[in-house]
Length: 297
Image 1 (cartoon, rainbow, N blue to C red):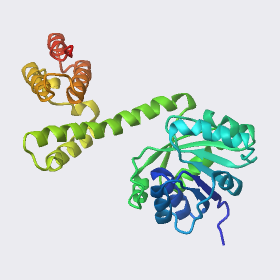
Image 2: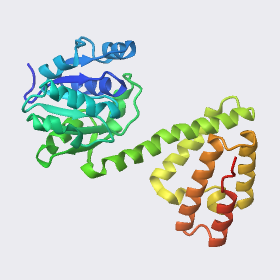
Image 3: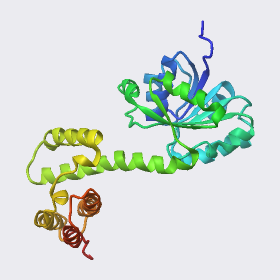
C-alpha cells in the first residue's frame, strides 16, 4: 500500500539529471508513472535507473502525473512549457517542477495560469546519469524557488531525495547559476588545460600529479576562503609570472590560445583579490597588471 502523500511522478527528459532524480523520488516511494526518452542513451538510462517505468509521449506523461519533473536543457524549457499550455495539458492542482538552475518559477507562468503549482528544484551537483549519482544526493544541496505558500512542498521533495534545500530568490536565480557554472564547469576546463601542459612536458599521468594538489587546494579554499590563497601572483613574484606568460605564449606558438587567455584572466583576478586582502602592495599590483596584459595578435 502506498504511503499517504505519495505522488504519481512523470519525468520529462531522461537525461543525466532527470533519470537520477526520478530514481531518487522512486526510492522515496513515489510512483514514477512515465518517462520521456528520445535518444538511445536516454532510453538505456531510463531502463537502468527506472526499470519497469513506461517510456511515453510527453503529453501522456503530463496527463498521468501528479508531479511533473521537467529535466530538459535551459533553452528548451520555455518552449516546452508554452507548447504544453497551448495543448491544454497542465492540470489544476498539479505540481510542476523544473531542474534548471537559470530559471525560477517565472518561466512556469503558463503552468500557474492553468491552476498548477510551479516549483524550481535545481541540484547543485554534476551528474553522470548512472546509479553512482544517487549516493551523491546525500551530500548535495538544491537551489529551491517557489511561492511562499508552496515552499514547504518544494523543500519536502528535496529532503525526500536525501538532499538539502536552500532557498534562492526568483530575482537571484541567474546569478546563483552563474556562480555554480563558474565554479564547476570552468574547473573542468582548468584541469584539462593543466593536464595538457603536463602531458606536453612528458608527464604521462597528469591526473596523478594534479589530483592530490587540486583536492587539497579545494578543501583549503572551502574551509578557509581566500586565506588559502598562495602562489606567485599572491606573493607578488612578478618575475615568475612573466616567465609563466612567456612559456605559455611559446606553447601557443606565439599567439594567445585558450590556456594563456585563461591564465591571464585568472591571474588578474587573483591579483585584485590579493590586493584586497593586503597581500600585495600597490606597486606590486601595478607590475603584475603590466605583466598580465594580453598582447595583440
